[in-house]
Amino acid sequence: MSQTTVTQYGAIGFHGQIADTEFTDIVSYSAEAATPFGSFVALGTNKERQVTPLTTSVGQATLAFGIATASHSVEQTAAGVAQYAATQTASVMKRGRVYLLTDDAVVAGTVANLKLSSGKVTDEAVAAGIEAFTQFKAKFITGTTAAGIAIVEINPV
Image (cartoon, rainbow, N blue to C red; front, side, top):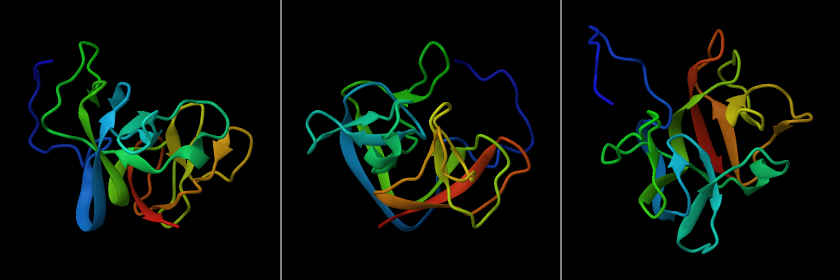
Protein backbone atom coordinates (compact mmCIF):
# COMPACT_ATOMS: atom_id res chain seq x y z
CA MET A 1 0.00 0.00 0.00
CA SER A 2 1.49 3.33 -0.99
CA GLN A 3 1.30 6.57 0.95
CA THR A 4 -1.27 8.92 -0.58
CA THR A 5 -1.32 11.83 1.87
CA VAL A 6 1.14 13.80 3.94
CA THR A 7 0.34 15.75 7.10
CA GLN A 8 2.44 18.13 9.16
CA TYR A 9 2.12 16.01 12.29
CA GLY A 10 2.05 12.24 12.51
CA ALA A 11 -0.32 10.20 14.62
CA ILE A 12 0.39 9.93 18.35
CA GLY A 13 1.13 6.24 17.92
CA PHE A 14 -0.20 3.19 16.16
CA HIS A 15 -1.56 -0.18 17.24
CA GLY A 16 1.29 -2.38 18.46
CA GLN A 17 3.91 0.39 18.55
CA ILE A 18 6.25 0.33 21.55
CA ALA A 19 5.50 3.45 23.60
CA ASP A 20 8.88 3.65 25.39
CA THR A 21 11.74 1.34 26.29
CA GLU A 22 11.84 1.75 30.07
CA PHE A 23 11.54 -1.64 31.83
CA THR A 24 10.75 -3.46 28.61
CA ASP A 25 11.02 -7.22 28.04
CA ILE A 26 10.59 -8.30 24.42
CA VAL A 27 11.20 -11.88 23.29
CA SER A 28 11.31 -13.35 19.77
CA TYR A 29 9.05 -16.23 18.76
CA SER A 30 7.99 -17.74 15.46
CA ALA A 31 4.46 -16.78 14.44
CA GLU A 32 2.46 -20.01 14.11
CA ALA A 33 -0.26 -18.16 12.18
CA ALA A 34 -0.69 -14.65 10.79
CA THR A 35 -0.33 -12.38 13.84
CA PRO A 36 -1.41 -8.72 13.54
CA PHE A 37 0.57 -6.03 15.34
CA GLY A 38 -0.92 -5.20 18.73
CA SER A 39 -2.63 -8.57 19.09
CA PHE A 40 -2.48 -10.50 22.33
CA VAL A 41 -0.70 -13.81 21.86
CA ALA A 42 -0.71 -17.25 23.46
CA LEU A 43 1.92 -19.95 23.22
CA GLY A 44 1.57 -21.98 20.03
CA THR A 45 1.80 -25.70 19.32
CA ASN A 46 5.53 -25.64 20.04
CA LYS A 47 5.34 -23.77 23.36
CA GLU A 48 9.07 -23.03 23.43
CA ARG A 49 9.20 -21.36 20.02
CA GLN A 50 5.80 -20.38 18.64
CA VAL A 51 3.02 -17.90 19.38
CA THR A 52 -0.46 -17.58 18.00
CA PRO A 53 -2.94 -14.69 18.25
CA LEU A 54 -5.91 -15.01 20.61
CA THR A 55 -9.35 -15.82 19.26
CA THR A 56 -12.74 -14.51 20.42
CA SER A 57 -13.46 -17.67 22.43
CA VAL A 58 -14.22 -17.56 26.16
CA GLY A 59 -11.11 -17.97 28.32
CA GLN A 60 -8.68 -16.29 25.93
CA ALA A 61 -7.41 -13.65 28.39
CA THR A 62 -6.07 -16.42 30.63
CA LEU A 63 -3.93 -17.68 27.72
CA ALA A 64 -2.45 -14.26 26.83
CA PHE A 65 1.16 -13.90 27.90
CA GLY A 66 2.24 -10.97 25.72
CA ILE A 67 1.53 -8.58 22.86
CA ALA A 68 2.90 -8.77 19.30
CA THR A 69 4.73 -5.46 18.83
CA ALA A 70 5.14 -3.64 15.54
CA SER A 71 8.17 -4.21 13.34
CA HIS A 72 9.45 -2.03 10.52
CA SER A 73 10.68 -5.04 8.58
CA VAL A 74 7.23 -6.52 7.98
CA GLU A 75 5.04 -5.43 5.09
CA GLN A 76 1.28 -4.94 4.98
CA THR A 77 -1.02 -7.52 3.45
CA ALA A 78 -2.96 -6.71 0.29
CA ALA A 79 -5.85 -5.74 2.61
CA GLY A 80 -3.64 -3.20 4.42
CA VAL A 81 -3.18 -5.21 7.63
CA ALA A 82 0.27 -4.91 9.23
CA GLN A 83 1.10 -8.33 10.66
CA TYR A 84 3.64 -11.07 11.00
CA ALA A 85 3.05 -13.83 8.47
CA ALA A 86 3.11 -17.46 9.59
CA THR A 87 6.71 -18.57 10.33
CA GLN A 88 8.07 -15.00 10.54
CA THR A 89 9.90 -13.97 13.70
CA ALA A 90 7.48 -12.04 15.92
CA SER A 91 8.54 -9.65 18.68
CA VAL A 92 6.43 -10.30 21.78
CA MET A 93 6.32 -7.80 24.64
CA LYS A 94 6.05 -9.46 28.04
CA ARG A 95 6.65 -6.28 30.04
CA GLY A 96 6.46 -2.66 28.98
CA ARG A 97 4.25 0.00 27.42
CA VAL A 98 2.57 -0.32 24.06
CA TYR A 99 -0.09 1.53 22.06
CA LEU A 100 -3.31 -0.49 21.79
CA LEU A 101 -6.75 0.10 20.31
CA THR A 102 -9.54 0.70 22.81
CA ASP A 103 -13.10 -0.45 22.38
CA ASP A 104 -14.52 2.66 24.05
CA ALA A 105 -13.51 5.66 26.17
CA VAL A 106 -11.01 4.64 28.87
CA VAL A 107 -9.56 6.36 31.92
CA ALA A 108 -5.82 6.54 32.66
CA GLY A 109 -4.84 4.50 35.71
CA THR A 110 -7.61 1.92 35.37
CA VAL A 111 -7.20 -1.81 34.73
CA ALA A 112 -7.23 -2.86 31.08
CA ASN A 113 -9.38 -5.90 30.28
CA LEU A 114 -9.90 -7.80 27.03
CA LYS A 115 -13.18 -7.39 25.13
CA LEU A 116 -13.55 -10.72 23.33
CA SER A 117 -15.85 -9.53 20.54
CA SER A 118 -13.33 -6.98 19.26
CA GLY A 119 -9.98 -8.17 20.63
CA LYS A 120 -9.45 -4.62 21.93
CA VAL A 121 -8.90 -3.37 25.46
CA THR A 122 -11.47 -1.70 27.67
CA ASP A 123 -11.70 -0.44 31.25
CA GLU A 124 -15.14 -1.99 31.67
CA ALA A 125 -15.50 -4.43 34.58
CA VAL A 126 -15.15 -8.15 33.98
CA ALA A 127 -18.49 -9.55 32.80
CA ALA A 128 -19.80 -11.75 30.00
CA GLY A 129 -17.53 -11.08 27.01
CA ILE A 130 -14.98 -9.05 29.03
CA GLU A 131 -12.08 -10.93 30.59
CA ALA A 132 -9.20 -10.05 32.91
CA PHE A 133 -5.66 -11.02 32.01
CA THR A 134 -4.15 -13.53 34.45
CA GLN A 135 -0.53 -13.94 33.28
CA PHE A 136 0.18 -10.21 33.49
CA LYS A 137 -1.32 -7.03 34.90
CA ALA A 138 -2.52 -4.48 32.33
CA LYS A 139 -3.14 -0.81 33.13
CA PHE A 140 -4.04 2.22 31.03
CA ILE A 141 -1.33 4.89 31.15
CA THR A 142 -3.27 7.29 28.93
CA GLY A 143 -7.02 7.70 28.50
CA THR A 144 -9.32 8.33 25.55
CA THR A 145 -12.63 10.18 25.13
CA ALA A 146 -14.00 7.55 22.74
CA ALA A 147 -12.80 4.39 21.02
CA GLY A 148 -9.25 5.10 19.92
CA ILE A 149 -5.68 4.41 20.91
CA ALA A 150 -4.13 4.45 24.39
CA ILE A 151 -0.87 3.43 26.01
CA VAL A 152 -1.21 0.24 28.07
CA GLU A 153 1.44 -1.01 30.47
CA ILE A 154 1.81 -4.73 31.09
CA ASN A 155 3.75 -6.31 33.96
CA PRO A 156 4.13 -9.96 34.92
CA VAL A 157 2.14 -11.07 37.97
